[in-house]
Length: 223
Image (cartoon, rainbow, N blue to C red; front, side, top):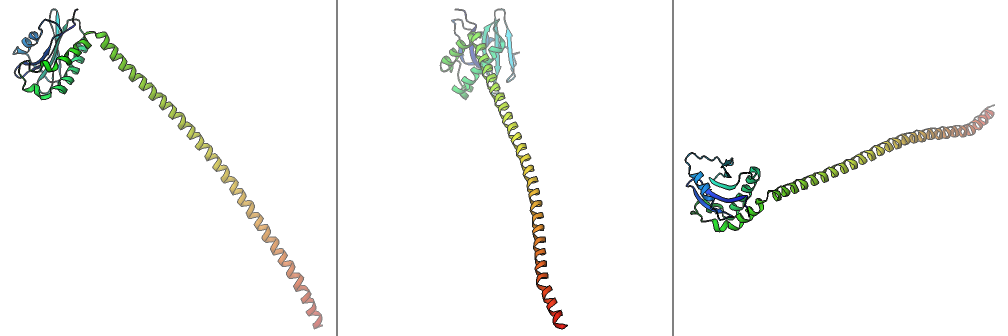
């Protein structure tokens, strides 16, 4: 079976020691990496991605801040973007499993520890269709999540519109109630004035009824 990924490993750049390496085939492509890193003209800047193309293969590598170089050898047609995705995942698994042990490990000292993880990664990334499909699934999940968020926003907007409409209705009802209250107060005030007028008129009439006979009687007595 043809392998698209023929080597995956980690080199300590300070002394060019291959601390962990895995090859799914019998060919030892670690020699390609070591030869490249042993070249005095080779310079690696942390977090910068590098690709070197040969006649039949490509080498992809990236370094971290501790001068650990994560590298893989692939066939020449293998997409670089997927190769670096592989190296990102390899870096995460490597640091999780061995961490700073890699800074002092001997040649191949961590290969056995990382064999299972590196083997799984080589199998996973060997078929780029599976990797693209997984990436597409992640995009679909993002799309579905965004659609759900948009639907929720629209639903919230509809509820806000309904609340705003209800508030406007309440405001109109409050104005109507206020107008009716004012009219009722005016009516009550008019009725009170009328009642006081009638009461004053009755008092005046009673006073006339009482005072006039007394005045007439007093006048007659004086005559």
